[in-house]
Length: 104
Length: 131
Image (cartoon, rainbow over all chains, first blue to last red; front, side, top):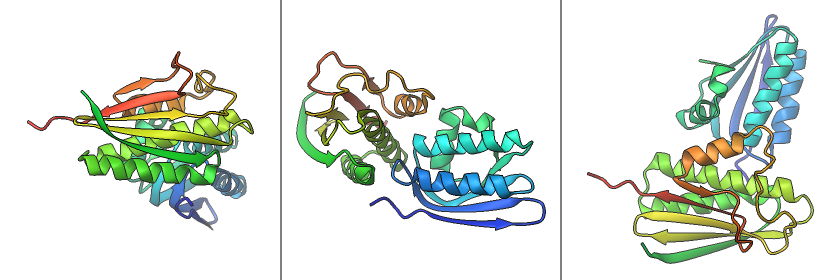
C-alpha cells in the first residue's frame, strides 16, 4: 500500500553507496534496516545514502538511520546523506539528527 | 470557530494501511487550502500517530478511527479506538522521542494524553491568514 521502496547498493574498493527510492514508513522500515545494516557491515569505508528518490520518511525510518550510524561508528566509519529533499531534511533538523549525520 | 465538515476513516491496525491515513490527510489539507509544505507536515504528523498507535497496541487493536474535522481556519484530527487496550497516553514511554518532536513541530495544538477516554489523541493545524 505504501509507495514501493527500492533499494540498490554499490560497493567500491573504498566505500559503499545505497540508493533509496520511494517511501519509508512503519510498513517497510524493516526492509530498509536489513539492507542498510548489511551495507554498513560489508563496506570497507564510509557509507553514502543517496536519498534523491526518497519521497517520504517517518520516525521509524529515522530510527533506522540512527541505528545504522551507531553501527558504522562502532567500526570507525561514518554515514553520509546525499541528495536529500527539503521535506526529508526538515525531519532531520527538527529531531536534531542533522547534527549527527554528515548531510551533503 | 465551528467545525463544519467531518470526514471519518476507519482503518485496520496494520502497518500497510498507514499510507491510506496519510493520503487522506494530505487530500483534505490540500482541499482546505493549506500550502504544499503544510500539507506535507500534516501528513507526516498523522502518520506518526498511526504508527505509534499500531506499535503500542500490539495485538490489542483491531481497528482505529481517525476523524478529520474541517473548520474555516483549521483542521482538527482526532484518533480513537474502541478496542485498544492502551487507551490514553500512547506516547508516554516513547524512548527516542522522535515521533513526539515531529508532531509538536508540525501541528499547532496537540493533546497527547487526553483525560477523555473517548479518544486517544487530538491535534489541530490552523491555516495561516494571508496578509
